[in-house]
Image 1: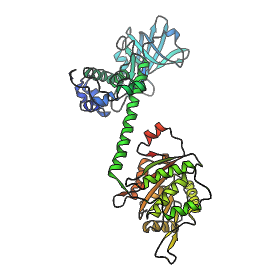
Image 2: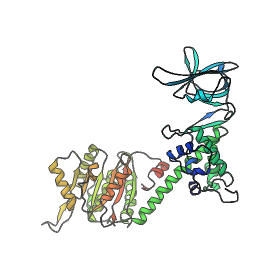
Image 3: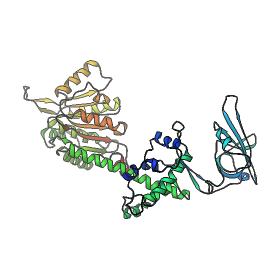
Image 4: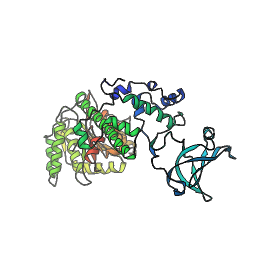
Length: 459
């Protein structure tokens, strides 16, 4: 990788097979592949789960129980045996100028083969006491000098795949060495990094895998975490643009007779916040692009009234509306409230003598009696049911909508994204996508809303 070439992008790194680094035996290379690490990009994003700070050596005499400690000493004795249950056990005593500590390794017989009496080693682990003696169970042990005096990354290991942290450490050193001449490309502008106090990406990868101190790991983690969140947000924005570009919504009427009846029937005036959100939703409903909006509001702030306005706009425009709640109790509450608010509302019907009929609002849950359930399903299929309120039953296979125009989902955080899409797609007839309004009473910070609900506009 000549230094004169441009910096390495993630796409470049993903195109470089791990075979290029050749820093370990074929067995270790196969372990990487079994762990889905196939490229340099995969390897660099295999982050340490913790670190051993081997820059702070401790004397045995200063060790305290239930504390993590790093000591350097000499092996005084070492023994291998099997327990009564057949488990391999290696015991070892480490001494320095101030005392001795006993090490016990379970199911690691190779420890005895790789070390010998009189050898200088470094050891890291949790201090215990047993019968008055200091002891470490399954500590990390290494020969003196190979990793002493630095912060050592500990990587996720897989016994099934045969992936060991020492092997990953060797691979990572070679990967960083190969990327050094060209460096890893950084798409963030210098001004953004300065404003957010972020280090550059190449330095972040070096500090996350080869830190000189724990302070560097924190700065590296901050930058790499930012990158991951940014990628998630960009992907959500990309999906949102794709939805707006590729999906067609149905244009609704928001100033018709039905909504006039509804507003006139209310015994109170809408709040300024409700009026503002109604305008935002109306702009969506009258657009050819389908609405994808998140409605936030405290309990009692009038979200249901705003949602009902959107559902009635669909009904007066010749469509059906559906409201899905996470529990049967909440669905029944919504049904009772909306039935009361719409009991005097009518829509034109030339087939009836009086030329109009009441707005029909039905409930659909799994606990509904069979005769009532059949009646509601038939009404949804024919279009006689104008608004249906229910639980997951709304996306059951037996449910067929005649012309679903607006979908409202309450407490969306209890539903998966797939369920949200499934209800919306149920009404996708003639390649026309229903409008979607998601309601939540859970306060969501703006940054979290942008990340989790990046495909939705927020009111």
